[in-house]
Amino acid sequence: MSFPASAPALADVRRALAVFAHPDDVDFACAGTIAVWRDEGIEVAYLIVTRGESGGFDDTERAEVPRLREAEQRAAAAALGVEQVEHLDGYPDGALAPTPALRRDITAAIRRFRPDRVLTHAPLRRWEQLTGPSHPDHLAVGEATTCAVYPDARNRFAHPELIAEGLEPWVVREVWYAGGPAPDHAVDITDRFDRKLAAMRAHRSQTGHFEVESWIRDRLTTAADNAGLPPGRLVEAFTVLRTE
Image (cartoon, rainbow, N blue to C red; front, side):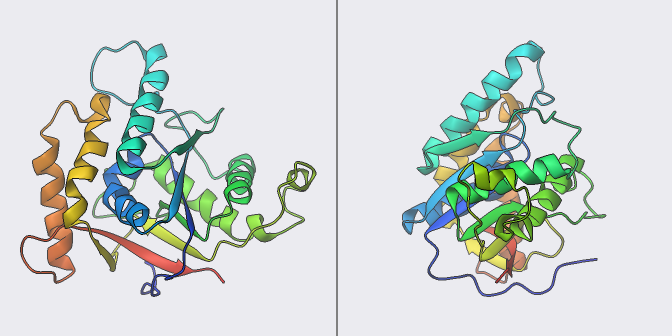
């Protein structure tokens, strides 16, 4: 199973909401693209489903990890010019599923922020790369977000308690999927690489154990090669689907 070919990206986007499973996911996958959008004047907000309590590579007390990683995510967002970062409560790192409750909470965020574009994990597993993009939490958030985009966020009768909270239906016009099979929409982030690197380095608990610059440069170079760009370019790649 794979995605269809990407649709052309909308040219009149004003707001974008990034929905990801863990602190650092958005920066590993998309920080350069977020920098491009901010430079274009697009307002961007983050919704992070967990606080990443199962992550890390040292002996930091487990009770301290959520606070630490939330602070890292806010610092990373600030490096890109993103001010609004929300974390959901009650969703354990490592045990996510696309439940009605998670769909409801993502739907609520969509109706609050009212984005033209949603950016999230691909809900499709990549069998050739089980690590990273195919983390079960990523797949679960991608699926729950897709269901929140359609039908939940636009359906007045889905999660009717949200209407009582003043959250009226909203139609997301476009979804960008990160990490899925055969991404074919390339975003050249060569001129924003330093900002992506700064965002990734803000996640010290996750990136402090390896040489992050060469690691990410290799992956962005490969994506540029796959997109047929000239040598020296750096690319983040996605699948773009219209929802209207």
